[in-house]
Image (cartoon, rainbow, N blue to C red; front, side):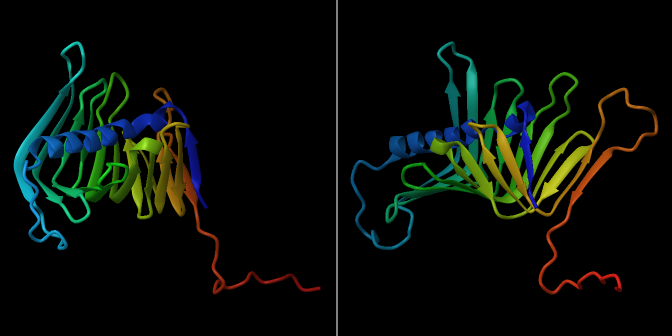
Length: 221
């Protein structure tokens, strides 16, 4: 069973900043590419250059800071023209600010497929009376051109006292539709002003029973 969500809250994961990760990395890779091609080891998956402890900042036309990318290192591999970033930390400085972190980010040669791997965390900071929203998972595949993100491992989303967990995720930034794969479990805190002592609303979906499940007893005729 899956759970669908379509609302302004679905923009909690702005895929545009992952596209910026691809763009910033591509720019950095082009700016630091050796002027003389290195042919030794071309057929092996060895990096032709490594950049350590770098930062990339992007400003809008008015001079305001738009986004910042910090990372421990970047390895470029000439055999497939891919890039691996260690400990990326990408901040989108628009209101409310959003931060994406992971142990690694893998980008293909064209930046059309970004893999965030290990301790993936997307934090949209609080704004006004809205608490921060945090998405966590172990692996996230992002396709910036299509504005899609998918995960086939457990995903958790928390906002204040509300949280929801699912067995996977499919997010479409164009339609603002998020689909959590089952089983899905959620606790939704009611709006401020709910009666004192009232318990938060709970939503639980269970996977369909498999073929080994014990059938229910039938009434005797």
